[in-house]
Amino acid sequence: MQAKLLAGVVPALLGLSIQSSLGQSSSPKLVPRMQVIPQAHDQVSFQRDGIELTRYHFATNLNRPFLFPVNGPGGRSVTRMGHPHDPTGHSHHNSIWFSHHDVDGVSFWEDKGKGRVLHRRILSFDDGEESASLVALNAWTTEDSTVLMNERRRITARSLPEGEWLLAIDVELNAARGQVRLGKTPFGLLGLRMAKTIGVNDGGGMIRNSAGAVNEKEVFWKPARWVDYSGPITPTATEGIALLDHPKNPNHPSTFHVRNDGWMGASFTFSDARVIKRDEPLTLRYGFYVHRGLNVTNAIESRWEEFSRTSPAPFPVVK
Image 1 (cartoon, rainbow, N blue to C red):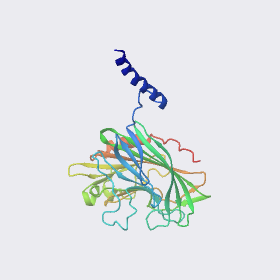
Image 2: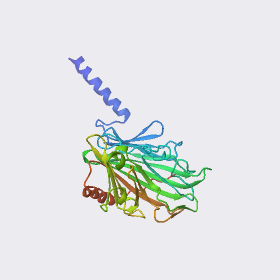
Image 3: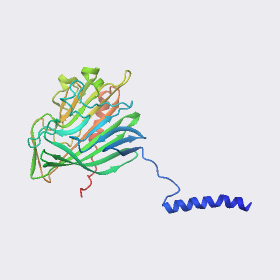
Image 4: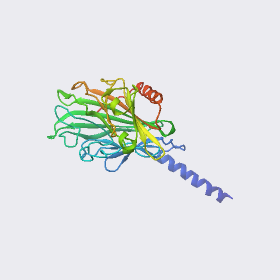
């Protein structure tokens, strides 16, 4: 009898001893629903319950960092890489990306341009029950490696009901020297290439904006609080993305550059050039509401109103 008691007690005591030596408590911490997980080859996966929502690509041989795929509620990407009918001329259409056609006369927009947005390092990763985020440090450099702007970028994925989710991108741009000029152009700072089947021309999708306009003829180069691009993602399902312009952006409501071929962008310098002075950074905040169905505009407007009340957390200090 005594031997049996000892047989049970010794392993239990041993287990407690091991837990104590490892500094573990008897109750494990809850695993966050939303996680940002580093991957091989300079990529980071944003996941909800272990299922990927999007992936951030930031290898230093790229012309710019980008996000791909951007998976909708059905598990398929609602964005794509490149123009479906001109993959060479539009090779810079990298799903969701951030660049500009004229920074002190240097183009960072297309792949044949002389500027590159180079990843420097990841400053932070944060997981949570409702959202997960990362902060990256980038440098906007010319062909001779001159840095024109330094950038801090926060990417956040926030869970929403029914498989939907919100992607938020916060950017702080600071002149590396005295000042830098963003030239007047409809190309930049934000670009988005939708999946082929969601395009109006290729898939019979639909473009709508906060002013009630529909498709390219009415939406092209018009200001709006948001623009939505939705269309078929499977033979039986419709999904899309509403691009949300935050009211604290200096050019709000943004002018949107939108085409029936599946292209959508927020044109920060459509009307005028912008000068960024050193130690007086430009801060911008955009949202991407990834949703199911051809949502009624009231539902999208509600998401925009919710987004408009949000403010980004302070960026970590660069040391």
